[in-house]
Image 1 (tube, rainbow over the protein chains, first blue to last red):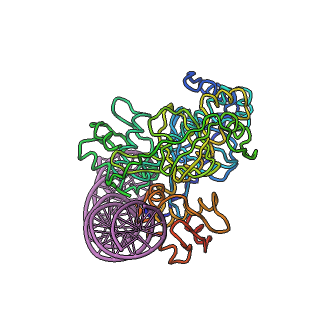
Image 2 (cartoon, each protein chain N blue to C red):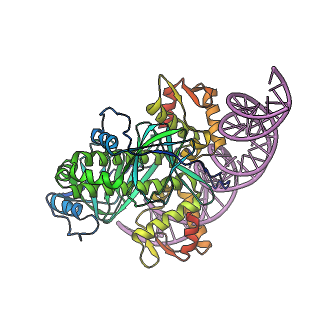
Image 3 (tube, each protein chain N blue to C red):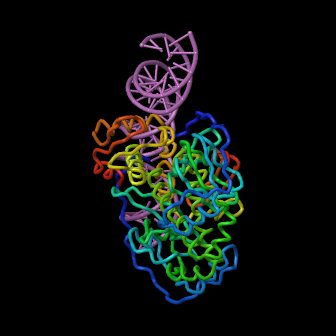
Length: 235
Length: 235
DNA sequence: CGACGACTTGACGTGTTTCAAACGAGGTGG
DNA sequence: CCACCTCGTTTGAAACACGTCAAGTCGTCG
């Protein structure tokens, strides 16, 4: 957790294939109906390979993004290579929200990923004439705020077991299917999300398995054997 | 940082004096003009003593708040008494933002404090007819989001010196006056904000003074002697 | 003066990091 | 089919930053 000095390899990778003017796949009109329509109408679909950079810290913030398929991590690097991942964005999630004119974080594809981008200015103009859309944007931002505040407690006040439990419960909620999760991200990604080292994350996985709380058929697949124990760890 | 089991005294204190229907003090029409007007128009001024509870985790989220004077901490308690402070809110700041129908955090006055409360529903109705106000609310929320993402890096990836440096720089930016800060909050508050113990915070203050980075005329007053060193620590 | 609360300092313990090596799955070429 | 590489993961041993426990100091208030 403390001064991790090892600089990590930078992820310089092929540029994305760009498909301008394409409609995003037709999304069901769930909680964010107006926003979904906006993405379908003015969205621009883009594909990224694994570890492809979607945007970089400091770039002019032109777009909001929605994940069509795959997974995205947003992160910040300290000058000595320490990395903090602020979130994982999975199919259906919107990312790139923020007030500044420049991105404060970078975004990369965790796996091969398709995203839909909408221009910030265009969306803002639409929102100025559509109070329902404006409300959705506000609510979405506020929900991410709530989520991040919850993470603060994890990062500031929980030990390794509790952090991993919080992570597994979050992932179960978001992509769990009959008590199992297929993790799209690496151990290093998890470590950089939870403010731990890869070794501590790996050891904690092993210990949770030894305690029969989870099962690990492979390192990316987690079966929850004792959700109650995880929840107890979570608070 | 790890399992701090000591439960802290709960702050049960006299109820606030309530002044219904009062206009908030006339605020200059700065960055959030429409919002400022809304607070002046439909705001309700309330006074709280030191450690007075403004709202509690789990309560129905009825209002947004603006600090007129004093300082507020928003925090969450884990069941064993560990506390994470998500932010300090100083004169002019707005807090209580969030999407959920219930507050996910508690809010207390750090010192004797006056706040102005506006009803969420009323404000939302105004925002539905005033796109400028809606935009301000969105921007405000997004700015807090950016701020919190920055804090994640502090909590997840920085050591004690770097955390305190980040804190001191933040406070300097917000309430600094010619290179000095008058801290409204206790060492324990700082510790619970930075994910440290009170002892580590105290020791780090002492060390920064020994390194001639700061000067401590009293424990609440910090004079910055070497801002460059602090900034270097900060990233 | 004594009591109280907030802060500081000291000594020791420990959870996590660090450094290093081994393991295992997937791919490529002989 | 096996040797051999690569890359992500796991495991081990030792070091260390921070936590814990406990005592001491300082300022304030009655």
